[in-house]
Image (cartoon, rainbow, N blue to C red):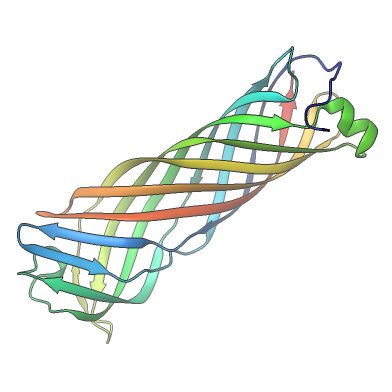
Length: 232
């Protein structure tokens, strides 16, 4: 197995960063509640956005295929106006106050999504990458991320575009799955260029976003980053 082949490579620390594209997955299972009031929304799609990140890690001396990594990533998954269908039971409060079940337009102004990731890493060794793959070094990681979603406001409109109401802002934290896969290109003993795919999942719960109403929903994000790392 190439990933587990022995290597004479020494242990190494690394640090670097990259930029690229965030591609959020649909927001699903959106629910709201307050007392006897319950709300569900159909799925909706956040916008693609700029993404960036930094990372640092360590590969072990005795097992140079294996390592650990910490990474920090950020994006801005706003939601432009799009049609949502609301199912309302009970007496609605907050942004849906006075409304009945039906179609609306919804948008979200997100200040940031910041993720703090912790990964166990597996890679082809430098030696094998140089001798067998023309300096190209596959790697993969799996672990978890602490995701912080800072929402400035959520807005609800009639289907004609008239504003019904805005929420206030709130930040919430969620822990979810994080996986990555990428390719390094070894420029020299110190510098590598990389392209990397990441996927992370999340579930957020907000209790101060809209008065007495509490909201929860599931989300996910794929991202593609290009960058460089320095190894020492």
